[in-house]
Image 1: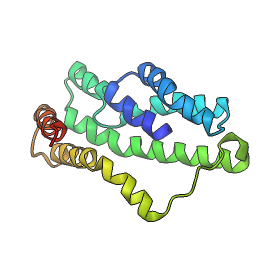
Image 2: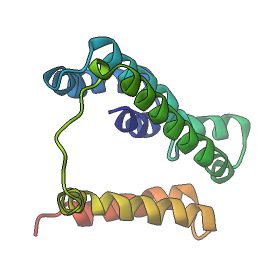
Image 3: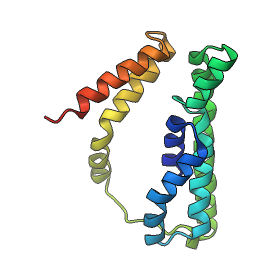
Image 4: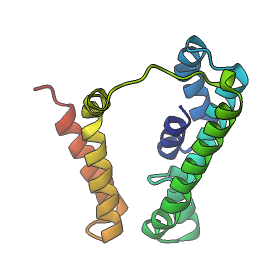
Length: 161
């Protein structure tokens, strides 16, 4: 759930709002699966704070506007540290659970085919992220144009068949 909090925070721009939302969404299933309350709340709270570096972070956009810095360069500068923070945080959670398995009991095992099948539902988001962030980094379009393209893409994908 930590990675979900981080991604949601990067879009919302508010660690507090993300933590409140994720607490409502993620806490009940985590309790159902037997996670300790301390581990669940720590994952939700810390996950929201790391998302500030991950593009498209609202905080980076506001900072860029206030300091008249390039938003594209801020996004590029935040990408690697943000995802490195996610990986290190996930490793820390994994270590804590390895040390004390009661902190986060294992879920049911899925076969690789079931894992790939579960990923089919998120292909649209992955394509959107790749096109938008790749286009900004390569210089094909500005962050504002990328936002417009993302909105158009969202409208097309969201239209029922």
